[in-house]
Image 1 (cartoon, rainbow, N blue to C red):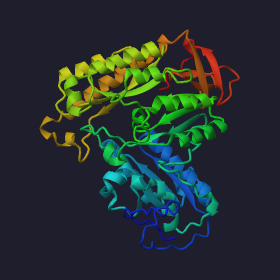
Image 2: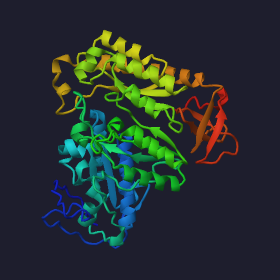
Image 3: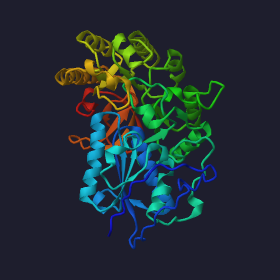
Image 4: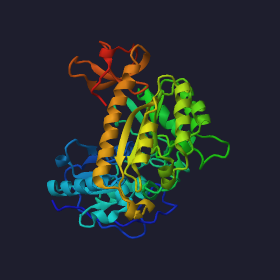
Length: 464
């Protein structure tokens, strides 16, 4: 069959066509109807938010058009690539994935995500349907019309509540045991190295009523843990509510529903106060945070325009340990930011040596197009130095991970049993609320919550 890929320009969306998504004024070319049913394969690059949105898109294809997902791209008539542009490496991987699918299959390839939004020229030589992040909420309708896929029933078109952000339905298939729930998108911080504000736009919150409705659906599906996700959770509600209703209030409302615990994804220290931590120190909130500290050098933080100091981070770490005994904090760190000296790097080591830090995510600096840091050409750090610093911190991360896990031996923990199986014991692996993988007790069932007193032999030391 003739390949159906076409590149698509952005279209202006009519306010009156809220459920007639993304059609625009110009007629779209029609393609011959397939005699066999469409099947879709999803490929995600980058963050959990991208993974969540991929699942939402695949789920919408199934509900509205009967397009079933497949696990092998060679079996698909549509391949969805959700791209990532946060680093040069992730951009290259996105481009490589699209080219690989183009060579291997005859499917219609749909490219969305951050590369499609901010660097669409990366795919100029590819025959794809190119839809930026801003078109994600209309992506399914646009692709269905492009490929002439008939709607199963008009009654299955989801009504979009006022002020809602994509998606309005929470997907169920990201994990069999842990549910993800997007409550916020976009970022207002404009750090000098970061392309995310350009890729995802300003901070926007999902209305409270829709979040609670989605959480109710997830709880009804049997999930015992809900992970709240977004670009900048700390800013939740600031664009919608004038009565100080924010992340703390939302978490309290969710927990009042009962039946599940709450895990928080990455929490930006810009705007994260000790008062907010105190409000989140509530039964049912997991003793686990992930904080992108980026550097321990105040000089580097100022050049990054991070708007906090290393002392502020230490205060957050100290208060977290007081409020959440046994907390495990993950920290993002950038090494090799332009002008970073050996002294700056040593200060980063000093900061992340804090006992609250359980592990690190280390990112070598990557110049992103259009950001101020990308123009700091004369101060770029030699690649060998960047690699050495990254390797050192990754080694330190492994030491800190093991030290933290060992410190929790003899403590009690609530464990969510997952689908992974330990190779030696043959038993299911579970995750404690403070993010330690353990071998669950004999007879444990996937998806249930069990109470354990941790022993050394229970901890999965090789699992990250």
